[in-house]
Amino acid sequence: MMLYPELFASLEAVRWNMERDIPWAQFDPALLTDEQALTIKMNAITEWAALPATEMFLRDNRHDSDFSAFMSVWFYEEQKHALVLIEYLRRFRPDLAPSEAELHAVRFEFEPAPPLETLMLHFCGEIRLNHWYRRAAQWHTEPVICAIYDFISRDEARHGGAYLRYMRKAVSEAGDAARAAFSRIGVLMTSAKRTSRALHPTNLHVNRTLFPNDTVQSRTPEPGWLERWLDEQIRFDADWEQRVIERILHNLSLLFGRSIDTAQELNRYRRELVQRLGVGAPPLLGDSQAA
Image 1 (cartoon, one colour):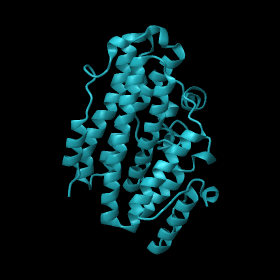
Image 2 (cartoon, helix red, strand yellow):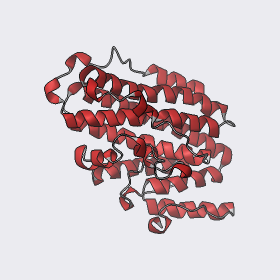
Image 3 (cartoon, helix red, strand yellow):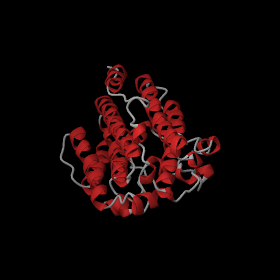
Image 4 (cartoon, one colour):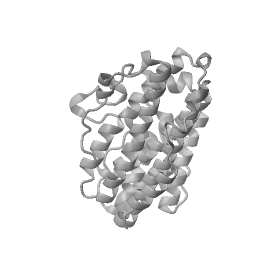
């Protein structure tokens, strides 16, 4: 059964309006610092990367018209995130509004990748973004941008739920092959404590011919901004990271029908699946550490 019609209706019912729902009149210039405004610019550019991500999804999911149709909703809402952040800067800090060239710089080709692994990667990315933006709303002091990040964070949570619906569909259709794909990426995305890299799709390498400038973040005006934003500004600490990990593992436990509480347990389950499938496991980043 196609999921797109139901997902379209559910997301349409809660969609916010940029003119009516954003409290633009409450803007207080005394509560917006230069430091904060610059992070808004970087997040606007990062959100613009939904454009090449959508091109990737459509290319790699030609076999799946249901999921490809859902991309029309996801793409619209993600580009809307970029647009509302740009509009905020245009109104209140026009000197920091990203240029068309800066936005276009993050549009580049992502190499083809297995669709199920990519689906899981973006499911985890939506959970992580939901938590990042919730923390950003707490860090900011200006009320309008706090409201904007709250709206965006809720969208990201709903997108994660939509991706999870497609993951359930994949498990019902492909069984252990889907479980193996999801668990493989799940081990990587719940092992953030073992790497200094922020584990989000926009911070991962996606085109070997462009290496090392083949991450979205590497093509922003300040490639190192994300780690600084997380570590020094919104202070996305170990407690917040653990919330992300627990949310991912909780959903995978429900999806797989078994209790999985740690990345190590998930990696053991992944290996069970590989043995059941009778195929060699592809290399997993940090596999020796996550065992």
